[in-house]
Amino acid sequence: MDPATVNSEIVTPVIANPQAAVPMATAPNPALADLQDIIHPDPIGAWPWAIGYWLVLALVIALITLLVIWRRKRARDFAPKKAAKQLLNQLDRQAPSYVSDVNSLLKRTAMSYLSRDAIASLDGEAWATWLDSYLPAPKRQRIGALLAKRHQPTPLTLAEANELHELAQAWLASKATLSAPEQTLVQTKGYVQASGDAQAKSQAPIQPADTKQPEAQC
Image (cartoon, rainbow, N blue to C red; front, side, top):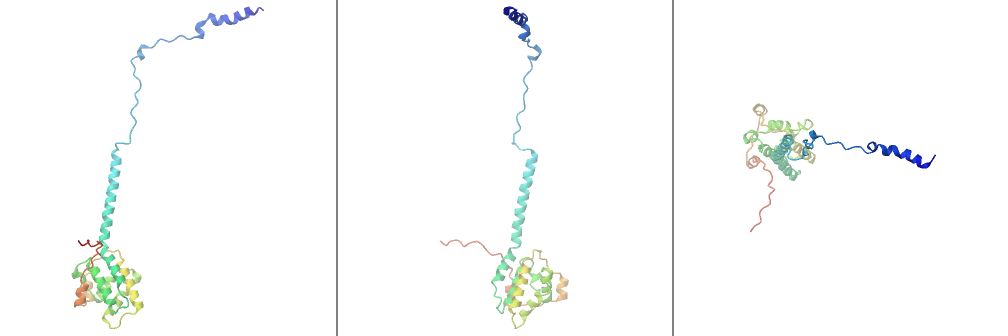
């Protein structure tokens, strides 16, 4: 077969139907001409916060404020006991007046929280019972016997002085709120009204130590 004839047979169908090779462009639809592009909403930002975030923030601030107020009030409440602990550590346990000094210190501390009338006249078994009520159970029934020895001419032994020191520290470390002794306790246990300069000194409430530095002299 002639090569020219073969090439004409192969090429002719392609040329004979040009529409099959090149698609015709479709006419635009008039109904779609008036349509607008899709408008996407703006992305949501972090500000301003929603109302829920503001409520949570307000709650956190309120809790922090209450915590600060509570801590300051607690520090003020325990300031006299803290000052008394420092004074207790400065007392000489071998001094003959150690028992009287500890007794006066405890009374002054108690009167920093309660009225003078409720505490100043307490003594003897009534005073010891009231002190025991703020001591741990294993340490009770001992402080009264040790404090009673201030009326005796023989001073405490070093072991007794150390025990009294530990009991006084335990009483000062108590976190319980002090309350005035019941009147029935005073009447049934009895009391001794002390007098003199030592008693007048013991009736002065303990004030928190002033931590402010003196101003420079001009």
